[in-house]
Image (cartoon, rainbow over all chains, first blue to last red):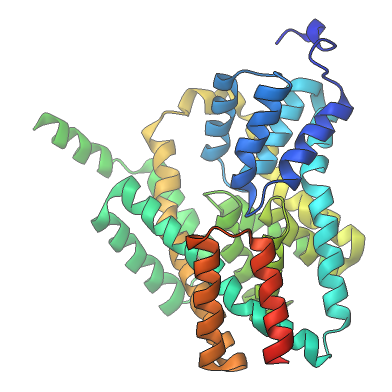
Length: 197
Length: 176
């Protein structure tokens, strides 16, 4: 999009804030559910960028660790409105829900000793278990789809062994895996052999 | 120094969490429950459940609350900054390089190779949550709530807001 078209596309800090505020406030269940909503705002409603550009940014966000959502809003804000746009878009994404979270938990904590609140906390525990369990299954399935059963099982057993039995910090294990992914040639040789056949 | 610890806990969890916000949850739990001892498993489960009941990205909501609980408003700001800024700045700084290697098999393999580890961390966390629930509320209530929540969330696709609210009411009535 050309810079001098800013007015035509209603591109100012206020609309930038509103776009990311809406996408974030309507996206339940973690950052990923907000991405289609973000696309709707940025691509369909305001037409600040096209489909391809948006997909490119999504792919880029996926190559780096950390929350996808804030990386995308920050980067899109930066691309459209410079550094101020970056700060603005990240604030719109993060701040409203962060305040809600702090308020809710602070209120709950103030009545921590009341049996009623303790009962509520106990009620929510298995629900959190289901949420995390579903995520675990999700990662397992994606892993199987990405590299097949055998490597998934091998890496799962290694992870269990290293973290649970040896008690090694997960950060060290993941750092090691990142090293393997970037510098090992093993898989490429195998892929080439498969191709040759 | 508490601010530095808040920064470090969020920085480490987010920098190694390949696979978006959900991947950082177990890493964050490891830092704030196992390593720093700021929260119990039960308290962390409340954060996860209520965080999922609210809209918006999960990693930053957790970061904001953890920071606020340990270091007030400044702590909340530092927590969110540590979870958002490093990878965002990396993305902007490395844009050219990333564009070039976007399709590189090595970069794609990065996310793949970390997934089973994240799955294990999430799996262990699931076990912890259910085990604590079994200890606190007993087997019967844990099964009712667990199966009920699973059906509501996954089968009937009911919004987490209502599921979490329902669990709070159930707890207030039957578990108080």
